[in-house]
Length: 237
Image 1: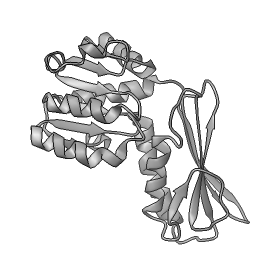
Image 2: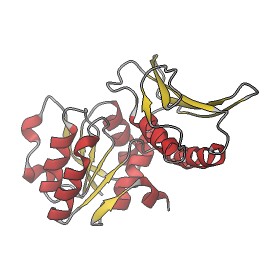
Image 3: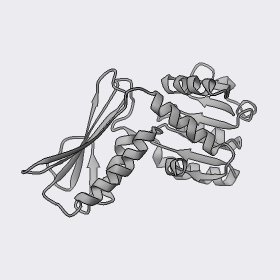
Image 4: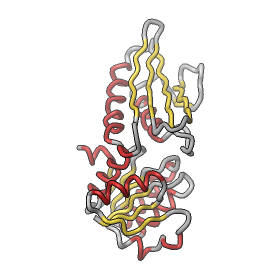
């Protein structure tokens, strides 16, 4: 498989390490220092584009890859107000796109565990739900995309909660997400159900970026010969 890495930071380099070890070829590596190489002709050398950039550049990066007709996966966060537009471009170009707030296989299983627990807890209104997420200090967005996905999974099953907020709150209709930035943490997400009687916690802790990189490569292999819109649920089905 020929891969274009759009965003060559820590995640891009971790993906490169695994991809090369598996015998794949990196045909394009784009960072802020070589944007002149980010051309249609260079993109079209690839079977798939893997995009991990920044909230401010992700949309245009993904759009450029899809307009070149190359299947693309993205793990960039905090740009999702433009996701429907990306879906429209993908369909118009008759190519493929997959977005995940987190590509880790463990985290995607945790997403499903989170929703299952939220369903179980739904009738028990004495439990107040909140979340804490911890990442390294270089992470640009807060809360994390993973935390937002977890929160949305809870809100779907909790009629008493109207929204999540990225701060402590005394409003019973709001779910607090507390974001902490502590080096060198690659990512920890904990969901708390607290009542006057007892507490329940579910937690996922990443030990390195390699779990995210492995999952991203798995998604890239899944999508490279497909057309349409996909998610990690499709990859892990």
